[in-house]
Image 1 (spheres, rainbow, N blue to C red):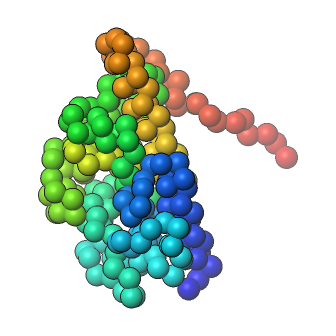
Image 2: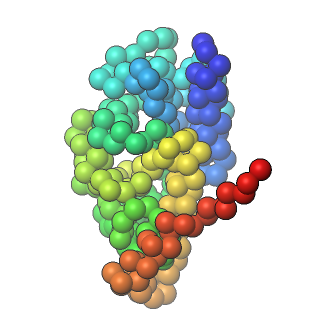
Length: 218
């Protein structure tokens, strides 16, 4: 096992444990992966995060072939499909946080009630069509729902977020669950006011420089 492989494996273990600590997942739900030269590393099926170790992380290609004693997550096809469709994606988090699940069970998208929705790449967070967990159909509807976005909801299921690193995909997962909670909270007493297309044009322009620090000469 190379030092790089060990680092990537540890990042999946750490993210899985953090996801449970933050109640983004519970028990054996959810799965996380990172792209490699040979395909991906992905968390195994049926292993609670507190029991997860780096040697349990499964190495596999994007067509379903894997090696080792552990069986990959039942959602490996979802991860593989996203990697095939989105060459820029390097890591994927699939989780079942309460507020995202609640919206997904209503099969509702998350509209631009808050400017941070635009940070996911579009004017809303789409909810996919329904498909059974672990199925090729779920992989297909996920790719469709997340097109042009960095996250989506999965109907009657949960959510998916992607990123250039495990940390980035995980951060988007936390952000999406926060926004879903805030949206549901607002709807509990009023109908949220959605930002206009013109509002979102300005927000997206501002996001082009958001969070960037100036480069200082050494």
